Amino acid sequence: MLLTILLQAVASEAIGKIGIALGAAIAALAAGYGIGKIGSSATESIARQPEAGGDIRSSMIIVAAMIEGAALFAIIVCLLALFV
Image 1 (cartoon, rainbow, N blue to C red):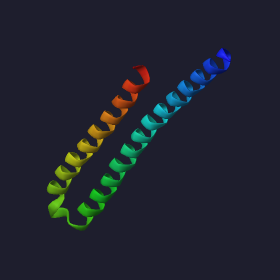
Image 2: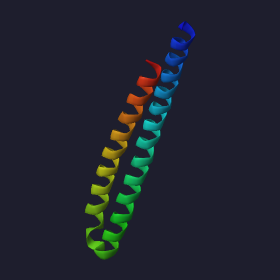
Image 3: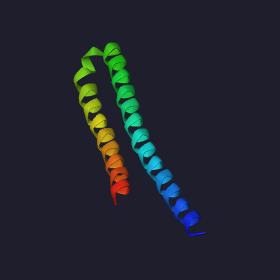
């Protein structure tokens, strides 16, 4: 009986750690996809209107920084959940 309870506790903790690692991986992949999508859209926009290149580039950098900040926050939360 006690062994069954201990095994269930260990198994649920391992599943939780797998979930945390999966959450951090999804956050990193989503951020990479989002920044790539922004880069491709900005490149297409600059190709269509070269005179607006500076404005598009600065907007792209700001949005990419926001996405990167949100992804970093998500990864930090996952790491805190893993070690706390």
